[in-house]
Every structure is written in C-alpha cells, then in structure tokens.
Length: 89
Image (cartoon, rainbow, N blue to C red):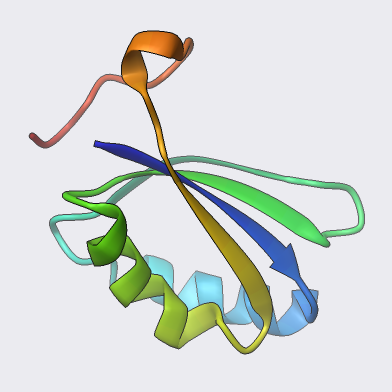
C-alpha cells in the first residue's frame, strides 16, 4: 500500500540530519519512492510504500516526532494518479 506522510517541520536542520541518517537504514519492508519539500523547508510530503500505516508510523515517529508533526494518509490507488509502480505487495 502507499502511504503519504505530511511532515510539518519545526526544526529543519535537525529534521534533515535525522532523515539523511535514517535513509541509510530504511527497513526492507518500507520504500520511499518520492518526497517533495516546500521552499523554506517547513513542510515535506513523502510517499511511502509500506505494509500498513501503523508499520510506517512505528518506524518514523521515534525518529521525527520531536522535530515534526506528522500526518499519515493511506492512499487510495484507484482515485490517484502518477503513483510509482509498486515494489512490494
């Protein structure tokens, strides 16, 4: 399934430091095919492929909760456009 995460970032320097380190250690059952970041670095929207919202949240919240408020959205593929090909099932 695809999950979008909207990160409202309170500390961009710390957020990106954490994100760069975490990218090297993403678990095999999670994929990050896309992300976009606003000018000013206060908001980032990530598109993940994950087995569930709960699994993704369990990975991200311990890392990012202190520097961003994170909103998780399960994506309905039938009503979406431009999604990457799914890598996992």
